[in-house]
Image (tube, rainbow, N blue to C red; front, side):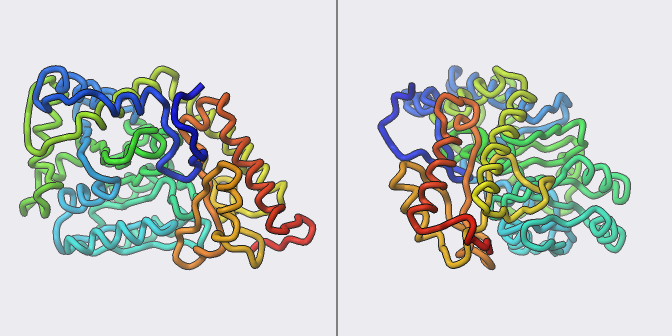
Amino acid sequence: MSKQESHPTLLIPGPIEFDDAVLQSMSHYSQSHVGEPFVRTFGETLTMLRKLFQTTSPASQPFVISGSGTLGWDLVAANLVERGEDVLVLHTGYFADSFADCFTTYGVNATQLKAPIGSRPQLPEIEKALKEKDYKLITVTHVDTSTGVLSEIKTLSEMVHRVSPDTLVVVDGVCSVGSEEIRFDDWDLDVVLTASQKGLGCPAGLSITMCSGRAMDRFNSRHTPPASYFASMKNWRPIMQNYEAKKPSYFGTPSPQLIHALHTSLTQILALPLDTRFAAHRAASQRFKAAVADLGLRQLASNPADQANGMTALYLPDGLTPPELLPKLLSRGVIFAGGLHREIAAKYVRCGHMGVSVMEPERKDVEKAIEALREGLREVGYQKEKASAA
C-alpha cells in the first residue's frame, strides 16, 4: 500500500506514477557530488544502465546528464554530425518534427520521411531514401508520444547496416525505454536516448543516452569542435568514465537526489528479468486496447504491429473534444493527456500504462483507467451503437 498523499492516478505517457522507494530516494540528504558515497552511487547507476540497454560491449558509453529528454537530441546533433551534413529523420509524429528542428539549429540538413498519421515509414521507402543520398545518421522515434506509434527497430537496423553501413542508427527511446524491448548490442544500435520520467519511473530531470563504440569513433573523427558546450561529449565523456570507475570528476554539477532516485528505480527494474517486464507491459496494453475497442473507439495506430505497449492514443467519438472528456476522468480520480499531434490534437486523448502502474498490478491502475474512460464517456452522452469515431 502506497504511503503517498492521496492524489489522482497519473496515467499520461509521462511523467508516470512513482514507486514510494523512488520518491523516498529523492529526499536523500545532501551530498558532495565528488564525495566517495555519491560517486559510488553514480558509478553503479551507469553500470546498471548497460544492463537495462542490454549492452556488454566495453566500447559502449552511457551518459546521464541533468536535463530533459530533449537534451538527448542536442547530444546527437552537436556531436555525431557536423554542419552541412545530411541526416534522415523517420517521421511518426510530433517528435520527429522537433528532432529535425534540433538538427537544423546546428546547421545540419534534416530530411524527413513521413508516414500518414498513425503509421510509420516502411522499409522499402527507407531503403530507397538511403540509396539516394549519403546520410550520416538515421533517426527513428521508437514510440512517438504524440501518436502511440511503435516503430520496428531490429529489422530497420539490419536494413540500414546492409544498405548504408556508414549511417549511424539513432533511436529516440524517450517513451519506450523501460516498457519496450531494446537490445542495444544484438540489434547493432548506435545511439538510444531517453529520459527519466517515463518507463524508468523516475522524476523528470535526467537525460539518459547510450552510445556505441562506433558512435564514439564518429565523435572522435570530427573535423570541427562539438557544436555545443553543455552538450559536448568532449566535456561529458571523461566525467562518465571516471564516475563509472568510481573516481570523482567534475564538469557540471549533477543532481545527487535524482541520481539516487534513478539508482533505486534501476535496481527495482533489474530485479526481474527484462523479458518479464516487457511481457507485463504487452499484457497491460492489450487489456486497455481491448477495452478501447469494446467501447467502439479506434486507435490512431490502426495496425496492431504499430501500437506501443506503454501507451495508447485513441480517437474520441465525433463531436467530442478532450476538454469535454478529461475533466470527467479527473473527477473519477484518473488523469489522461489530451492530443499533441498538431493536425488532430482536438480529436483524441492519450493514456499511459507503464512502470509501476503495470508492474504493481495490485494498484489496479489499468482497471481504473478503463472504468474511468467508460463512465466518463457515458456521462457525456456517448453510446457505442451511435458512435462514429473520427
